[in-house]
Amino acid sequence: MSEKSQHKEQKEKGFPTVDNRLERAVLVAVIRDGQEPRQAEEFLDELEFLAETAHIETVKRFTQRLPQPSSRIYVGPGKLEEISVYCKEHEIDVVIFDDELSPSQTRNIEQAMPCRLLDRTRLILDIFLQRAQTAYAKTQVQLANYEYMLPRLAGMWTHLERQRGGTGTRGGAGEREIETDRRIVRGRITKLKEDLKKIDRQMAVQRSNRGALVRVALVGYTNVGKSTLMNLLSKSEVFAENKLFATLDTTVRKVVFDNLPFLLSDTVGFIRKLPTELVESFKSTLDEVREADLLLHVVDISHPQFEEQIAVVKQTLQEIGAGDKPVFLVFNKVDAYTYIKKEEDDLTPMTRENLSLDDLKKSWIAKANTPCIFLSALEKLNIEKFRSDLYGMVREIHAGRYPFNNFLY
Image 1 (cartoon, rainbow, N blue to C red):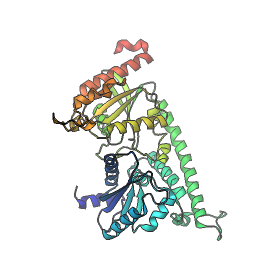
Image 2 (cartoon, rainbow, N blue to C red; image 1 turned 90 degrees about the vertical axis):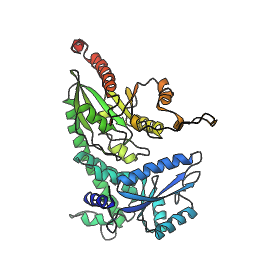
Image 3 (cartoon, rainbow, N blue to C red; image 1 turned 45 degrees about the vertical axis):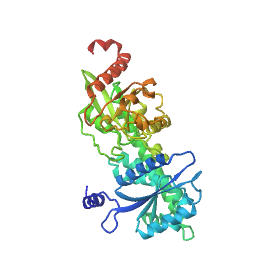
Image 4 (spheres, rainbow, N blue to C red; image 1 turned 45 degrees about the horizontal axis):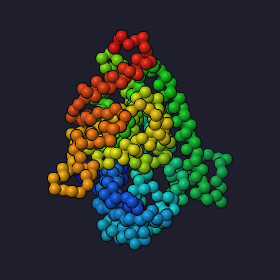
């Protein structure tokens, strides 16, 4: 996509632009003790992908090795000055930090920077705000947004006071603007929570009306191909795109394999350092996961950090109360898997990047008790085997629930 067309799309979707061009950003990360520089670069790759999803162009990266990020300015004073000078000289629009900044860190860094700041959480929230389509998703994201902003007001929300009307309210001439703003935001948080409870009750009724069909839920890291697999299995048209968080709303479809019906749901993707506010707000959306009989954990086998992504998904499933569900590991994108073959005289230790796909299948994956399969949803590789295996798992669950109907299948 050209910069001109990107700008047009950006403007139509409400993303900020500067002088009819894409916003330009620098990325900042701290490499902690014990963390490999390469891993830090891969984390920044993901941050850059997030920025690209938000239609922000990355022009440079800054990293610094520290035991822990500075509690005052995240990086060291010298590094902060270096970033500030670069931003001034190159007319940078935004600095994006690969961690959530505290309110005090944000205030201190803003004093040194000639441009605006975003942290990882704020960037993810902005993407969710732009991609939410249904009233439910919009309410959830707005709630998460207000909960993130509440401790960071400090003069940022004085415009809200102009939106407040009526008589008999507190907020005389002597009340500080920040106190007024906080009360307004707390009121909106309360209202959004009430709205979510109403929608939750409606969705609970919808789920109860589906009967006792076997429920299968697609879960996984963001951008691993869940929606593509959903479209393939259910022959539907769920939105799928090579961008992070293409799916925010849970989509449920009835699927029939050889006269065996079951419900298949596609859910929002997980991500490293997923904002706590979003996890809390989207717990209701993830009821489909908690109530599922089987989880299809989709993994992008071509991603260099796929093992860490698996760990992130497992941790998130634990957090939402779905850590004990039966899991079928689906290693997707085998067509994109690459590795570096070692020369025979290379005596350096073998690493994950030196393993072929066959070698990888014989590693910890073969020793795990979790059933798995390797396929490509995009290229439709090994799909028939996947359908057969999934049919067997669903049939087993169905047989346990309806033992007298087994002759039908």
